[in-house]
Image (cartoon, rainbow, N blue to C red; front, side, top):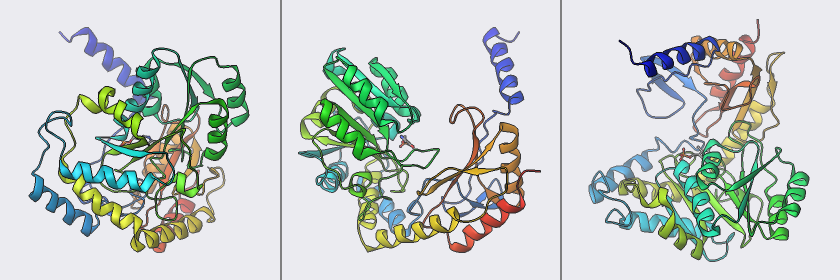
Length: 397
Ligand SMILES: *Cc1c(COP(=O)(O)O)cnc(C)c1O
């Protein structure tokens, strides 16, 4: 006899299939780079977040090997027990110095993932406010921010996408002692950039914190790749910054940069920081090399090349019936609409040798299923030309 729970799940899974919402994983057999082998088939990929092409960069890979020789394979414990290594400490120092032009008394804290960093920030804020807190959340925020807000059990108010006017009214009416505005910098499924300067001005005006999730900005935006705050030349004592290190930085993990006192509080109280085994110290060692590349001439050249590719792709024709979003970043989505149509488009592209994942609800709103095309400095202009050609020949029937 099948357990009733499993029967129930089978029914639900069949329903997911019927709606065209089944998610599948393919297995890559080569490093993360534009030309790779997936389930035995060579494909040209436009779906990773490896914006600078550092995930398979020889110097970063070499540093990872060196890190393993120096520190071994695993950390063996959480940071507060015995899992905090010299490479973690150096990485945090480097990140703090990168963000110091933008924050007051900057200090950084390395997390295993961005998901955990976001849970960590929001729960630490709520823990300090003892219930007297309201979080204002941008409606297109990443799932990890939404889950962080849920975990924190804070009161929450959504504000419409990039709508600073509504946010201003909400902040004005709020009587909570602690007010926190939370936003992605670059929206992960749309590619547009939040009005961070205006948001920060509102936060300063209303004594609110601004939590900026720069998962898609760190490494890519700003003259030295320092992210959205450098890009917009912002500095404020009201900022709490989160950057991820598994996207443009090519390795893994994430960090929070904020005032020394807030970071100290997180070390004491942030459960997603405390109750987990520290990421392998070799990763932190590899990240130091990756940051050196990001901040140096090579990083600058890679960003310049990426911007050329963005220009090339965003001005190219796409089939009638499909639409673009106004993005000037490496995230260049094409809205198809229905689940069935986006699955067909993705499958057609795959027969043409291209790997672009279909993004559907609940990751994006129902009816806005899309091809989330991401560009990387590791692509060539010929790769992008091939993509454009395949898209044009594969439009709606
Ligand atoms: C990817 C992402 C995260 C999560 O970071 P991970 O390191 O992958 O866990 C958080 N926020 C946004 C906006 C993201 O795109």
